[in-house]
Length: 349
Image (cartoon, rainbow, N blue to C red; front, side):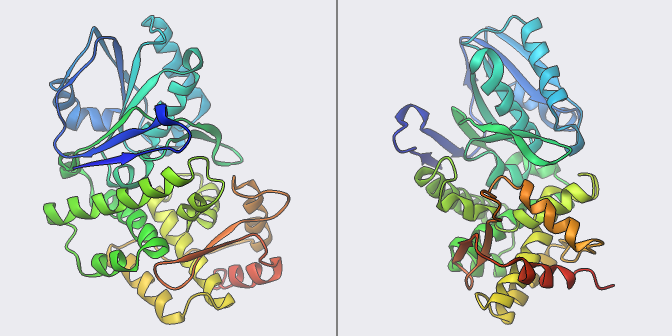
């Protein structure tokens, strides 16, 4: 199954997303696989058996969101200089969203830009992070605040790599599937309500649906100037949760799940979402043991963190809120008092 991303006005940036068994990959240049010890232990030999290149290197980085930093990117860059990589060389991101984001960002920087491809090994990366060209790292002020839009040359999604994925990581990926269903496709949401995602063919179809939705959105709005912002449903709140907890307590998808519940509560307050729809979404999250509650210790501080969100501009916070199930509204005009009223409901023990 091949899903194209055709970027308007940027024909050379268009690429294909392949959802199937990983094919043999043959390169006539230098190639570096960027991965971490956890993924390498399970799957590196499988990948190496599929690749031929003039010079093939493996760059190992530490495992964990806390290592998604400029320092790690510099470490990768230094390795590429040591290996005497040139502008025709290629990087392969082999791992989850952290690996994909850092590898893509490194590719955008090395000698002003070299090619990279994505081979995602987590469900979250397969349905979301590997598609669309968002790259970057975190810093003390927030998540992905340093980065670039830099598209891969190809994405290879092989569900085989999910066989070793822990249930918690699997659920974190499902959160991103629920996200696109709520904001773009009610039929897909109803499918997910009844689907057995642990059955391989059903999961493959669900991945394909999520990727198709995202590919269509990215094709329309590569640089997130309009409709692509809707893909951040749950993220405006979730990124603050991640920042407050030091990127160590919650997986990204878990923080997004909490963020969706927060966004839903604000949508109900504003009349965009019925309480019943909010309960349906929350029930779906709970079905996969995703967290749906969070204690906000300081509402003012939590609110102030919104202004570090990349979508905020001109001292206004952009919120993505569901409008029923299958549609959404993007607004920068929600009054502070209403937002804080909702946030205070998460401060009650």
